[in-house]
Image (cartoon, rainbow, N blue to C red; front, side, top):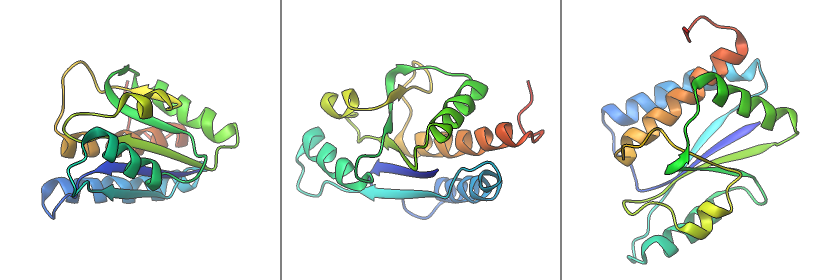
Length: 156
């Protein structure tokens, strides 16, 4: 199952980009054995300043056609890492070939786009900067792959 991280904004070179690249490389290597990956990042940028509606349109275009997706939003469900791994495995086992993850802009995700998501996921009640949300998502994808592969990376 291929994963698509569709995000608003362009991340420059720096420590966050290095972390994302590292975790996604690890995910691709570990996930391959359990039917996950590769993962790609699709960055969109609303240069005309159209707000959440314009960002939502760009994010929809970045998602593979008819692919289910998970919206990353503070109002979403909070899962443990094993629960997240189980959800990914269920999606894979249900025959999903492309799965998207959407991270909105500074104002969040347009409600209509969020409502169309297969799941809305939160990293907790706190609001995180978008670059850190990307890092946390990349790490959790890698962690999920290691859990499914039986690797000792995740400790209970």
